[in-house]
Amino acid sequence: MLRTVLITTALVSCIQPDEPELGSTEQLGVCPIGMCGGNSPLLGPHKAEELNEKGVENSAKIKLLGYIKAGSTCSTSRPCKVDVVGRQMFVRDIYGGTFTGSTLAGGYLSVWQPGDSNFAPPLPAGNARIWLDSYSTNAKFWQSPYEPLESYGLSYEVPGITRGPLCLSPPNVVDNEGNPWLSRFEAFFFTGDRYDHDKMTVTASTMAEAGDWFNIACAGSATAKLLLNRHTTAGALGSSLNPTRAQRQTMLKMYTGDFCGTGTTYTVQGTKISWGKVGGGLAGPSVTGINSVESFWTENGAICMDRHRLASSQNTAEAALEGMVRNGYLASPPTCRQMPKCSELPTSTLTGTYLWTASAALP
Image 1 (cartoon, rainbow, N blue to C red):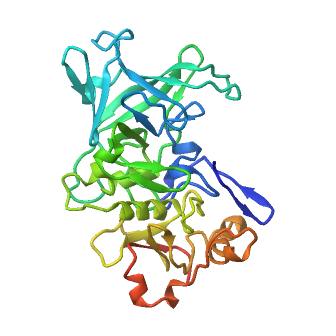
Image 2: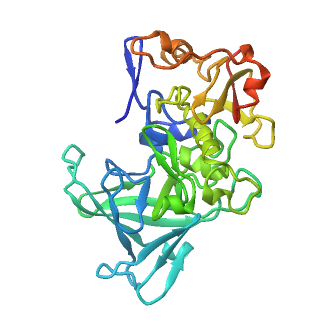
Image 3: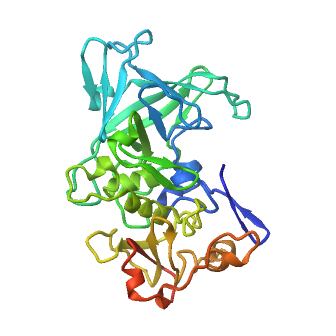
């Protein structure tokens, strides 16, 4: 169930237009893990952010049936097995052949999807296709070593009814956090981590725990940012970073603006922030126009807040989010726990956190 934040008399919901441009995250109100409209992997109305290699249905009841490509050994009568290993996708046929990378472009993942009579045009329950339209290795990790990552341009098709992009809204070439998006229209496949999209929590953080599940992370989404910052099992491979589940969840909540740790996000598209690891050694790009400490973060959300990332917004509803986070515990029902100012906390408390953020708002 998705929760939204009520600001005065206005119900603030997901805003789609430039969503992936966010440096902070992707929504005002609440949306799961960067899956709000614009940059979520959506097969029509159905969430396709993770699939199971053995055909177990995901939370949206989508089932992966296999990979098919005309003129190959992966046919409609004998779909090939999809096998995501770390951050690379392989396809294996019944004859022992293995295919990956650019050879997969032009084929599609065959999936079963539930119907939706409210979608325009109405979708009957049945088979659909996630097309692998293109392949590249233009994207690179944001943390050392800066290796290339494979990504795929994706579209979906319900044959004879509708076709559209799986990732609806690409990020800018350089987002508001200073991160480069060299594959703006593509998505990453990786395994080793799973997420509860309502609670903004990491529910699996090893290959064994993730099992046969793999993620489809659109450029600009929070899951893609975790991967690119090497805060996933697959992303950490080959690096000196080995973030714990708690540390990965901290980054997730930081990016998505889940200050209260409840899964409700308090942010909006196009927000500028700077961030880094408490004690150093890990940080986002250098960003101009940063004026104030925002928060210090743990896996349970922010422990304090000086100036919210939207405090300087000219939109009164957006600027009101600072008061909602800081004083939300006074509301009935409460929207947040008490949020003290970071400047009022002892250094020993702050050093026990994992990440800090800074905002453009003036002190």
